Structures are given as C-alpha cells and as structure tokens.
Amino acid sequence: MNTLRAVIQDAQARGDAVGHFNVSDLVLLKAVLAAARELDVPVMVGLSEGEREFVGTRTIGALVRSLREEFDFPIFLNADHTHSLAKGIEAAKAGFDAIVFDLSALPFAENVRQTKQAVEALKSINPSMMVEGEIGDIGTGSEIHDAAPDLAKGLSSPDEAKHFVESTGVDILAPAVGNMHGMLRSMVKGETKKRLDIERIAGIKRATGAFLTLHGGSGTDDDDLRRAIAAGINIVHINTELRVAWRHGLEQGLAKMPDEVVPYKIVPPAVEAVKQVVLSRLRLFNGKRRAA
Ligand SMILES: [Zn+2]
Image 1 (cartoon, protein in one colour):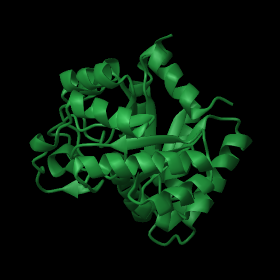
Image 2 (cartoon, rainbow, N blue to C red):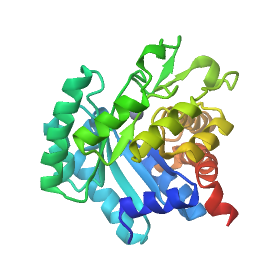
Image 3 (cartoon, rainbow, N blue to C red):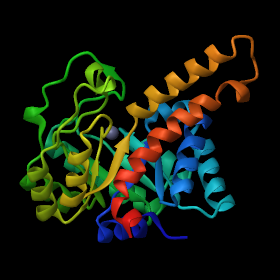
Image 4 (cartoon, rainbow, N blue to C red):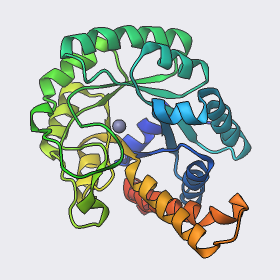
C-alpha cells in the first residue's frame, strides 16, 4: 500500500488532485468509500475537532485502518482543523495519516512559532504523518451562510507562504486564494459559484514548491477547480456539499417510509445522495487519471 505522500506525489505528477471529504457518521464514510472504490481512485477522509468529538478519535482511526486493510484500498485519514497540540497528539496516536494544524486565527509570527513546534512534536510520534499548516483567512464553519464574509484582506501572498513553509517545516500548506468555508444560500441553489485566484495559487506554488490544499471547495466553479489543480493544488476539501446531500437524502428516506423505524432501511437514500456528490467531485479531481 502506498503512503499518503506517495499518493499525493503521484497525483501531482499526473496533474490530478486527491479528494478530501469530511465524515462524521457511517453514512458519510460508506458513501465516500463506495464512490472512491467505484472510480478506483485514492481518497482522504477528514474530521475536524467537532466531528472527531462526535465519532471518537480512536474509533475513526480503527475504522479507517480496518477499511483500508479489508478492501486493500488507499483511503487515508486526516485530522482536519486542529487548533491545539494536545488534540494533534491524540490524532497522531490514533494513527491518522495527516493533520491540518490550524492556527491561522493567530498573528502570523505566532502561527509560525507554534506550527513549527507542532511539526516537531507530531513527527516525533509518527515520522510519516503529514502536517499541514494554514495561513490567511477563509472563514469558519462548513455550513450554510446568509452573507459572504469579507476575505479580501486575508488572502495569502507568495512571500508569506514561502516564509511560513520554510520556517515551520510543514509538508502541506493551506493558503487563502479566494476559497472560503461553507456555502452561501445562493450556492446551494446553484445560482452562484465561488471563484478562485488562479494566479495567486500559481505564485504560491512557485514560491514554496509545497503541496497545497484547497479548503472550502464546496460550491466552487468546476473550471476554476480544474485550473486550480493545474496551478498546483494537490488536495481539495469538500464538506458542505456532502452535508447538504446527507440532509436531503435523509429527509427523502424519512418521507418515503413514514412508519419505518429500522435505521438501515431509512438511511440508504442519504448514502446514495452523498455518494453521487463524491463521485462527481472525484471525477473532476482525477480528470487526468480517468482520461489515461
Ligand atoms: Zn477547511
């Protein structure tokens, strides 16, 4: 089985990106794995601190490891948006393949100082764990927002990206390049799309040479996603689109069977709705592999 690093490297060499999908229950996990297996492309699942709180850090570590072995399939586990070293250490000990150590809300110098410490501490527990750092402001909350936050001032520059990567030793960088967490109501309806600053992505890639993650990928213009991957994005995070599909699918299941109480008879439409979203995103992220 390839390591996550080899999988990202391999996708980059081809001009593809690895899809990262947040999961917080078995419906989401089953849907993501089913979609990735159907297309036979590697996949990452991620859980934020809140999602880990609900599922259990050790539980998800054991589940993903077990799925990887049972199906001999490249599914990798990421500790998304981790805000303290204590939570990071918990994830490292539970066997996570990667972590997003996110101190982007702190002043830049403090973010650099503490991220560097975290890289050293986490690698001492698991040297192969990939550590991602985050700079700039892309908002918080993978949910539906009524209004767009003003993120223009929080965009990342190639210079600060280079300084951050060199000073901290992170393997992966999450920059602010026009992306944002969550979706606006108009994006859920498909009326508007997020647009990305492709030039900025290319500049940050040139300056750092690091692997880059695009957070808040839900609701982004398809062509911008393709161009962002060509400009150097290696991992794309999708969460809100899955949550919307999960809710709609569950509502459908409940409406179809008003008297049913057996969970595994009610939730299949939710699995299917989430799977369709994951399939469509994985096809886009793995365009080169699928063309070959
Ligand atoms: Zn994120």
